[in-house]
Image 1 (cartoon, rainbow, N blue to C red):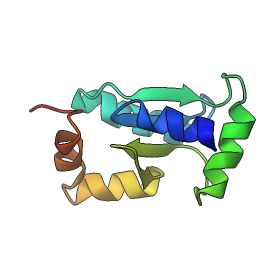
Image 2 (cartoon, rainbow, N blue to C red):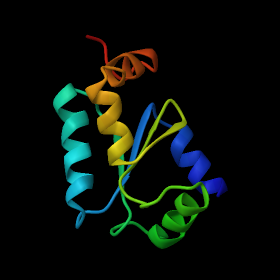
Image 3 (cartoon, one colour):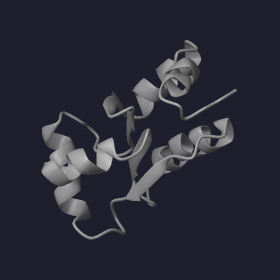
Image 4 (cartoon, one colour):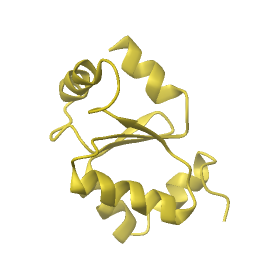
Length: 102
């Protein structure tokens, strides 16, 4: 859990993902299309990816990928991110943490 907290707090936007997950791809593309440069951890490629996935599950993330943190705060998975985007709350949130300037 301590390692997860460190990973989350180091950058303004952090995405936990898996290469094999189509929703992870969709969320990563959304942020990249905005011009955001998120830190992306591919849990199926990194050391201790399973442990990190278990820690995400302990935080209440279900499913465990994709999971997005903005400004060190858990935003949630694909449904939550898309809801924020559709109600026009995502861009202001990204601007507040300095991940987006326009």
